[in-house]
Figure (tube, rainbow over the protein chains, first blue to last red):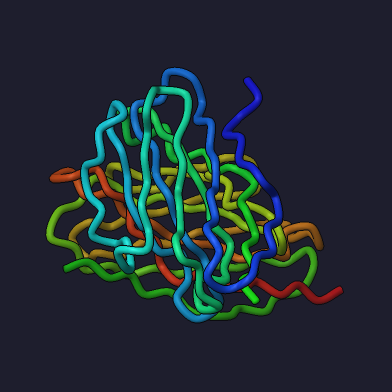
Amino acid sequence: DAGVIQSPRHEVTEMGQEVTLRCKPISGHDYLFWYRQTMMRGLELLIYFNNNVPIDDSGMPEDRFSAKMPNASFSTLKIQPSEPRDSAVYFCASSPRTPRGGYTFGSGTRLTVV
Amino acid sequence: GQSLEQPSEVTAVEGAIVQINCTYQTSGFYGLSWYQQHDGGAPTFLSYNGLDGLEETGRFSSFLSRSDSYGYLLLQELQMKDSASYFCAVRDPRDDKIIFGKGTRLHILP
């Protein structure tokens, strides 16, 4: 298994532009999570899906953020318009139903908004 | 609400043993997990404790006491490659969300 695949690895964009981050979870995993990591705030859960259905988006900071999971093998996180304070590393993770499985994280997307 | 507390930094010597503590306050509890993250890398799952007691995996062990809302990660025979950040995390059975602590940065001296 190739693990959780995220793209792009790095993204530099200008303030006001739309940014789309992509994630392919591990096949057969029921859960998909989007996290944001910064030095100040650590790992923050933004949103998660169970069987492609958004369950909790209370961590999404603003309406500028949106996430979709059109099928079991693909999810996107979109920021429109982007702002410098959105600069962070965004991780996607997937998990099987049983808690012992733990999360498998993707390599992350380092986003820089200038 | 849920919160996890762990030290921000710990320093130890190569070859030694180090313990990283974690205390938690959660409305629900499904077990305590530990993750390792190297600089520039992604968190990787290390261990899970669903029941009280010690779980051992090679040089790493993890302990849980549910009555004390406390756990720790024990790293033995420290190697330079163990320099990383270590996160404890709890999973809430009500919604399956995992909440992470702020992480403990482990510095290893030669």
